[in-house]
Length: 287
Length: 184
Image (cartoon, rainbow over all chains, first blue to last red; front, side, top):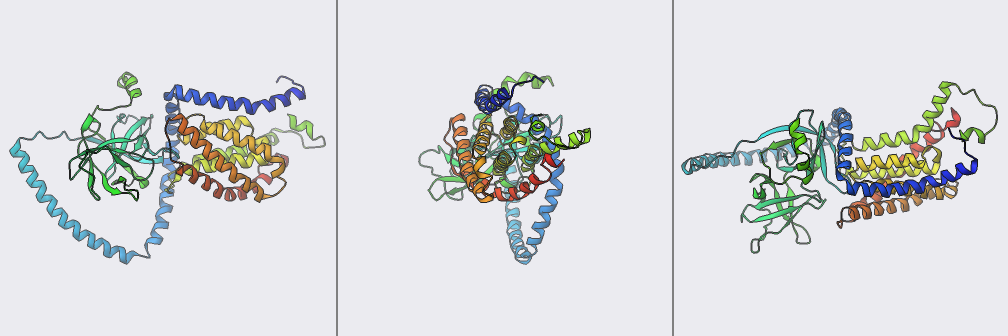
C-alpha cells in the first residue's frame, strides 16, 4: 500500500463522496446513451436471482395459504352458498356457449372460413415482481432453451397480461398492460370500434383514441385488435369502467396483482418489436 | 489500518480468526442491506411490494451512515445504489445519486442526531424520505422524458418513514453487538 500523510489521506477521504456523486451523473449519461447495457445487466442479475426466488416461493406460498385458510374458515358457509349460485349461473352459460360454438362452427363451414393457426404456448412461473415504483412488470422463470422471443404474448387463465420485453438466459420479463409504456390496440366489443389501451402505472389502464360517436360504454368488454400485427384478435383484455373523473378505464380481466403462472403464446406475429430486438436478431438465430 | 493508530493500548494478538471476526463485523451493515434488498424482490404477495425496496434501502443506508459510517463508506453506498437501480428498474444512476446524497446528509447531521436518541433521528428521516422520493421521482421523469404521477413517490416516502422504526429496533441491537468490531 502507498503510504500517505494523514493530511493527504483526510483530503482523499473528503473527496470520495463528491467524486462518486460525479460518477453517478456519469452513470445516468451512460444509461441514457446505451440502454442495452442496463438491460443486459438487469437480465444477468435476474438470471442469477431467479433460482433463489423460485426456491423461496413454495415456503412463502405455504405460509400465505395457511394464513388465508385460517381467515377463510370464518366465512366458509357464505362462500359456499355464493359458489353454488355462481355454479348454477355458469352451467346456464355453458349450455349457451356450447350451442353458440356449434352454430359458429356450422356457419364457418358454410362460409369456407380460413381457420386461424393454433398457437403454441409454454407455461411459466412468475418468480418475482420485475417492476419498480415507476414500472409494472413480472419476471418469469423459463429455464434454458425456452424458445421464447420478444414480443410474444402473456396470458393468465382470465385474460391478457402483457408482452415479453426482455429475455435472459433463464428468465423473461413481461411488461404488464398497466405499465406506463404499454400501448395496446383494442376493440370495444359492442360497437366494434378501435381504441388504444394506455397504461398509467395505476391498476386500471386508460382507453384513448376511440372514433367519434362510439363512446365506450360502462361494462363493455374490451378485446385485443389484430391491427398492426402485434396481437391476435379477440383476446380478452377487460371491462370498461368509468373513473370518478369520467375517464373511460379498463378493469383488466387478468389478476395482475396476483400473478402466479402465465402462458406465453407464440402467434407467429412479427408486428411491432422493440428496435433493439431487431439489432440482435442475427445473434438469436445463430443459437 | 487507521483504526489501530487511533486507540493505543493492550489488545489481543491479531490472529487470522480475530481478523476474520473483525472483517465480518465490519461487513455486517453492507451485507444485511444487500440481503434485505434481495429479499424484497421475493414473491411475498404483498400489494405494492415494489415500494418496499426503496423503503428498506433508504432506511439501511441512512441508519448505518448515521451510526457506523466506517462500515458504510461512500464506495459501498455506490455499489448498493447500483444494485438498487438494477433491482428497482430505475434509470441507471438515479438510485446511486439518491443514496449518496442521503449518505452525505446523514454524515452532516451525525454529530447532532446520534446524541439525541431515536426520535429526532426518525423525524429527520421523514425529511430524508420525502426528499429522496421526490428526487427519485424528478430524476426518473427527467430521464424518461415523461411527466409521472407523484402518487407512488409519496406512498414510497410514507412507507419508508413508517418502516424505519421496525428496522431501527433490530439495527440498534446489531450495532451494539454483532456489528461492533471492538467486541471481536
